[in-house]
Length: 567
Ligand SMILES: *[C@@H]1O[C@H](CO)[C@@H](O)[C@H](O)[C@H]1NC(C)=O
Ligand SMILES: *[C@@H]1O[C@H](CO)[C@@H](O)[C@H](O)[C@H]1NC(C)=O
Ligand SMILES: *[C@@H]1O[C@H](CO)[C@@H](O)[C@H](O)[C@H]1NC(C)=O
Ligand SMILES: *[C@@H]1O[C@H](CO)[C@@H](O)[C@H](O)[C@H]1NC(C)=O
Image: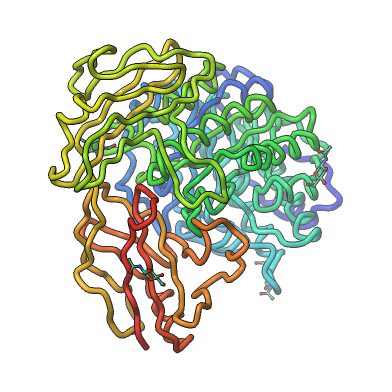
């Protein structure tokens, strides 16, 4: 379709050489953006797959198979977001920017796999946002970015133009933006996207689109997004939410979540963007609650985030990079309770949740997702507390389905369950070997179950306690785990008392001060705790011996070991 355009000089040129529009021999059932966004809730992201760089299979997932969508549908998801990176699939250059037809066909086939399972599909242009389309870098060639982006969407539009109205498009993932001028450029990118859809034909001008603002950040979107004019597509706004950063990404020792202040911050963010776009359908196209996070805290976060999104009429699509919610190979959900909490919250069903420390100034962290017992101590009655949220405790059973006796094995008072010494003694003793001993399931009158893992623990031991810092690689320190195979946090303190990184963490609570960040500075594998090269190098450049204190669950006084890097 040709339209009179005055501002898009570049586009006029392209229109003159445009290909024949796609025509379709199937029907298209139009759907409003509001109905579409309501219908896709909740959704699941096919992360690190077609968006991997340079190619599908390059990251931690093999090429996608249809069974994955079957698993996603069976779990109760309504939609999938299929992120796609095109950066390494261009076979032509300016001005045509031809995309490899085999790659376009692959995208089309994967979209069909999802549609075959009656899933709504949101697909996009993904890591191109930093590969070649970053409008925020100094000296960015905006002429090139606009031309290439436009041609990319014409070709995607031509390929997917006859897909049903279950398929929605999203222009580009998390495009960087630092200034109002970047925000203005991204508004132009949204319009170029809509214009390319017009040129591509098919049903693309009737199709729902989710537009973006700077970084897909709720604040920048609120500040700089301007609604496009002169286009007919039903449209929504998509933004992403990974906050608080330190909790979601295991930074600075934040393993505690759920204080009134934590909740107010999250609600404030959702309310702010809703307040700016009162009449526009909103979808959080990515949010994540990783199963590496402490279970009681992560489940509380999930419940609250989903309920708050619902309160602000916002749909959600869970990020999953393949190491997260779904084990694609085993066809199992790594934390099925977390998924149940999400679905119940979407449906307005009340969940009962394991209680845990929420106070950011606490010196220790408790969690009713566990009954911890330390080697050497006598077994006693132990309690676990649940936030009932209007429900009652119904039953408790072991993982092989054996019901516990509510008189002999435990007793209930409100949300507090007391597990009796005699029952716990079937798993625990002062001398039992450390490790996970049992998983109990607590069911309630409504909502998701809760789990209680019985763990005998002792302080893990390291294979060495000191070495000279050597740059150029990560330092793997052998460890003997004694309880949970989980590292909670790592404190990084120089001998002179200076924090190795981020001295501002002195303003955080005692469980967070001087702690490093997961992945960037510390990690662990089956047999090691790991000091990442970035932290080793920081010690070398600081020229001061530094002690790394590895902290485990339970986060209590003494459950930690030291390793010192000398220079
Ligand atoms: C910017 O991109 C356009 C279109 O691809 C190209 O013609 C032009 O030479 C580029 N400018 C620079 C400075 O590279
Ligand atoms: C809109 O967003 C801006 C920027 O975050 C914020 O200052 C303002 O309070 C928001 N407006 C409403 C009505 O929520
Ligand atoms: C309890 O469940 C956890 C996973 O959540 C697992 O790692 C552990 O091995 C289980 N314990 C037992 C005794 O099966
Ligand atoms: C670990 O080192 C810190 C100083 O960085 C010290 O205060 C603490 O007592 C040490 N802990 C152990 C278990 O040695």
